[in-house]
Length: 171
Image (cartoon, rainbow, N blue to C red; front, side, top):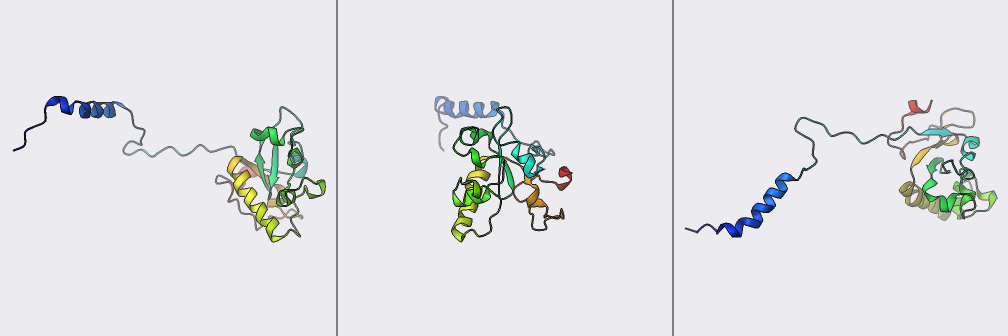
């Protein structure tokens, strides 16, 4: 029969067990459901005129820009999008064409993506996903993305970019 180990050999193990017993471990108690994630403010619709108010010219205003009709709050990148910054021309509007073409030419600072090459459309999708969606919070959509020119709903609109989007919050 094996002899029990002397108590001094078990001391580190006992100290570890005591420490683990005293450290609170966050978990849901039996019968309780975990708290849902915090819901952000509802997204909103922006007309071109409303979006233009957030072009980075006012120090006390957030800076917004839209790509593919999705409006992002880029205030945390003020050094890039604020007044006098290198990409300020993109702020306050949907600049999808400029993003696709990697252009700051005023003629390209528009939502219109017609006539872009396959490579430019790929660039637009990559920048949209890997830069804007990855770094900046979504605060809304351009009205053009959700509504057709005649004011009817755009049936191609899919709010996949905003998990807590609820159309009732928009009106």
